[in-house]
Image (cartoon, rainbow, N blue to C red):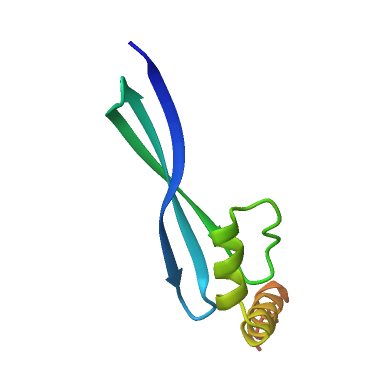
Length: 91
């Protein structure tokens, strides 16, 4: 009775205004070649994230979806989000 475990990326989704790339990873456990368990987790890649070491198909998808315009828009959006908001005076 041999148990094996493998992880594959089984789904890609492009989400939202900034083309966030969601990669669903399936961890598959098999006994003698028959699947007995499958679980999932997701990895989200934002424009500008380092994808060195990721699977080639992920790098290719990033190259297509994360254009210079998308990266610039996302950088501006995150900069706006990190600036402290001035509170209105209550006079």
